[in-house]
Amino acid sequence: MDYSEDANKFFLNEQNKKMKKELEEKFSANFYESESELDPEIENQFLKNVEEYERLHENAVYVKVSEYIGNPTFKSIDEIPSFNIADEIEKVLDIYSAHQINIDVLEENDVNDRDYYIFLTEELPGEEIENINMTDWTYNYIYEEFHPNCKLDSKDAVNSVLIELFLEENSKRYYTYLADQGLFINDLKPSREDFYDAFRTLLDYNGKVIDHILEYRDICIEDTIEVTTTLNTKHKLAQCIEIFDKKWDIRFYLRRSEFGGCELFGARIEELFNELNG
Image 1 (cartoon, rainbow, N blue to C red):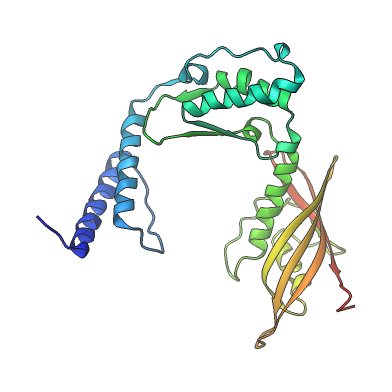
Image 2: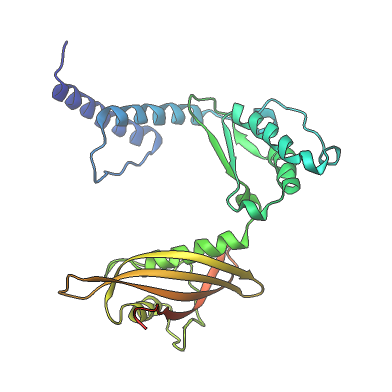
């Protein structure tokens, strides 16, 4: 039967609804309605992929990563001249890639070639992996998931705090990366619940922040972690068309959390003035 384009979309939408219901009932899958309508053909293919994965996952067994990639023999790090380690890393990554495994390092400057090669050839092969062979299915690993990086954890905490800082009024906040007590902003000592309001009061004193960009300048890691940043903000006064820019020197203070990662306990904020505004 020939369908018009609209009729075909209607048919696919009905099929997608049925597939969602079946996946929810059989595999306890959860689907959330998107604000923008997804093309029914793309959604249909996505649901087929989910169905195939769930079917394979149901009966999957776990094997060592080394077995999954064919038990290759890697050179010992001690056999490789230091100037050749980078080339050997590329060869090892090609083996992983051929078996649909991607590996990333987020803070590349903090990981030397020797440590990365040892991770790829000695540590990761001993991990377990779900033995699922599926078209276009990839496994993804991040070096820092195995070797936490204080610089990365500090950035994650600062970024998360800023996300909550600039939430719309009455939005729910979780304070996940804020310390429970001992908080400060300049000379203020707000409670955990008042931290964001105190912070915004300093930034919004002559115009509400409507946009911002954070630049990291330095991260000093000792017992206390000091993250030096520049915050560029755009402001708008109520009932005013004009938008103006401001720049702030902000130093965030963090420490290692007992639950992993970092928690933020303080900030020092200073507005930076250019030649035009004195």
